[in-house]
Length: 346
Image (cartoon, rainbow, N blue to C red; front, side, top):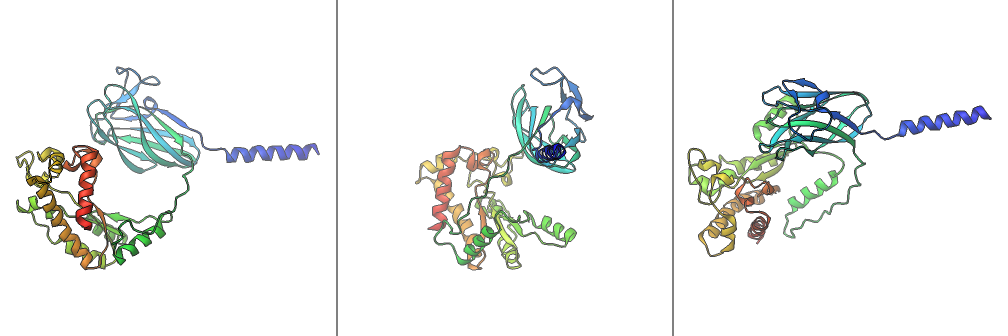
């Protein structure tokens, strides 16, 4: 009886150990393998015995060798300092590369989430490669991620009651795939061609851009090169089409050597004030906003006439402020979005 009880206890302990969740992993940068980088102690607030600096040249990096990890999904938290503006970096885990951005945080150390990674049982490697460089790394924490929440049902009814039958069919197809599969895509025809050449398969989604249909670009000699017609043909060949619009400002392009007209969708390349334009519906700038929207609506109408639904992505990345449509903050942006929605659906 005693032997039976002891056996059961041991089995329970083994089962509990096997079921134990992964443990957090703390990595001090100064303990990593240094490639073109060095340990420093001049900036206060670091953990451990120092931090790593010197991410200045291509190939500079730190490499952590994790000898005995438990398999699982981990959140990556990087403790860093980036006093000279936001800086891009590359995170490489077991050969898989991810890119991220450090926010400017002054002459102190702060922690930033770098997303989720998967570790395998046993040895793993984690690298932080230069990217843009000119930042410092203090430490990295790998924290087991909680189970993903159950996906909520997605409605199959479009928000626009005027949605066409092809648009409704595309929505229904995406809903069926939700949570089950991931569609691959490329936002450039040459990249899509490369994928097809290497893999023999065509990406499910192809992205295009209405950029060169912007009236202020056309006035300076841009050539859309039949982008709309090309994308319609791609859709008829079986690809899902998504379109964005790098909207050259309607007017007030700086058009200098440093900021030429073709950079006119960037905030620093135009003096066009979207907030001012929206505040006065009788102004010329407001009229030009509508003119530009109508020019793109004419292209979208070609898709509709061809029975091709479009995953439409206008006014993208507005929260960053680097495009003029987001440069004045959320309220003008929301007003512009509402104006565009009304213009395109009425």
